[in-house]
Image (cartoon, rainbow, N blue to C red; front, side, top):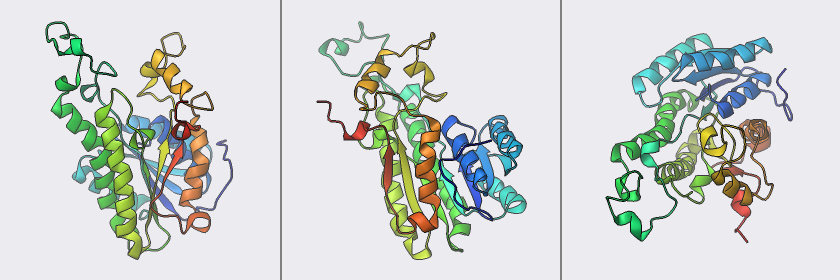
Length: 287
């Protein structure tokens, strides 16, 4: 049985979760279903979405797996048609799909004078070697991957009451992390877009907020944070040294913020905010 930190009543609500087959967003989907929502678990990989759905239905919840590419509007429109027919129109949209790409990442944290020698640096990626197509992919996946699902699903949401959108930003949006300029910039765009949407949709009553997770171990970053034997990498040690709580977050520790933000009774006047859930990372100056 899925364990909730507290329960809210989402009966008769339809929730659409993009990236719902991933570590964090599968937890979001399960939590919403445990509160009574009918959940559309959307993912580029339908088998991953189905795993989340199986966990929800095993607990007595209602959910459907939906194959959807957040960068393809036709795919999203097809997903919307399926969801509307099987569950009803969307009330809660969780824009969780996103990620990084090695082609938008530098090998080193800093540029050193010796890195300007092309012959000695042929095996590393400096800032000057970043692949524009890789950077474009990261921006598209995170920013357009938030904008396009909102275009598709918010049309129905704007026509009824009590609807909200939760975007997934990142601590990178507050302070960019070394080595990942594309991902940091893309998540900053998501935070900015969250504020823009909150203003734009205010007259039709659709609230828009975002959650900015700190550091959680997911399938995407596991090899960056953990060695094959499960010990922490050097980068993990730097992260933990900058996190006052001195640990990584657990996916279930995002659920309280999610349920607060989607609850009209608790957060009906909360609009346009980006909430860090980071163990104190954003509050720590390093000294």
